[in-house]
Length: 460
Image 1 (spheres, rainbow, N blue to C red):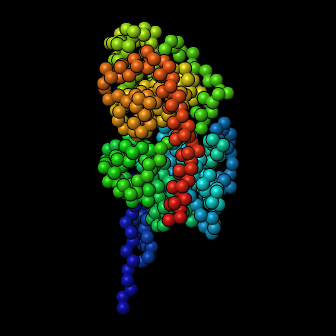
Image 2 (tube, one colour; image 1 turned 90 degrees about the vertical axis):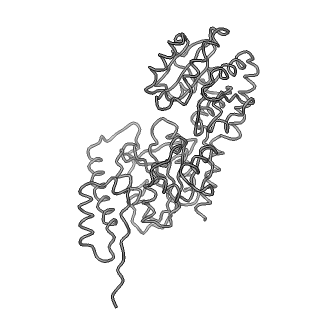
Image 3 (cartoon, rainbow, N blue to C red; image 1 turned 135 degrees about the vertical axis):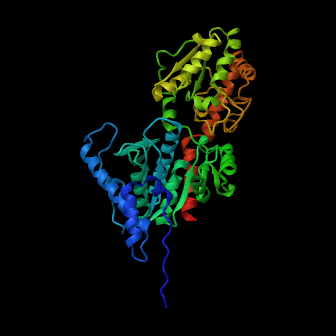
């Protein structure tokens, strides 16, 4: 009787997208000369891993021996990426686009990494954190008293993918991806660890439009998709086709570092060019592709407000390529002397800007969540946001601030007037906002909820 021939599984698209010509030659040779039960993509993994290891050794020899932001601890001791395959402890893995950088996605990633590390430690498990874009060093960070260690892959997608696969082969129990763009790597890890539990985190704008076919597929096949708001959950279900039973809402938290900066004993100092007088503050990127944030509406509403409060100032904190357009708009409306743009600020200076302003406003058409609203509320400021996206899930209209339709300059001006003419009412709104953050959006609340989710996945 003829023996049954084993059909090799197809080559994962992730490897095709990042494979070098040498990798393809290796794959062609594997197809041509492999044994009946030999899988060609496994040979490709070995080839890619050997290449990545060789490149890593060359980098370690070439880079400086000391760095202010890097712990020079042995990678083998800390992350155990090169432990023998006979290790007995189960492993949880965290994949992130970037951790050691400013930005909302990066901040959320640090929150996830800290909790994932603490969860693994509490259950006697290994935790391996891998960052795509960070420098190829071992990084040690602390967040809210929680320490975590991760390694960067220096924007090398091939090295990132192979490192993740190598980690998955060593008794991996669960992997959490901090961004949907990393879902294809997660799907590839399942080829070497079929029982691996997978969680993919979304943020907002990243899932507003249909993703590529492959990325949608990885979301649909994940054990769980986390979203920061019900609005983002709706987008994941409608635009990406993910079953609602696989979606869980997990709101982001106020950053512990920010909380420390605004604590009663701290006195952050605003930058020297922060204006005096009554200040409306808006924090966010000034990007032409993100004009939906409504900063232009704030500028066009300003002339009406200045007729009654001529000392009023509007401050934008952020960075981006759209500053010139906003400055021109301010000039066209005759308010350029009352509009200020501050960029390159430290986290402490940003916290000081929140504390020094009277009103916070970001009348955005759609925010996946809106961490800036949390920061303003934590500082006891009344908040004005757009009546769309995730903002209504944070701002209680008429209680902690106001919600206005996107692009409605008249309604925006009316809401600001209501706060300016009644400072006591504005302070009461700010106090209620601070109280809500205290009970619902502190980091320990986020950590408790995420640990419960991780425990459910590990035990299912």
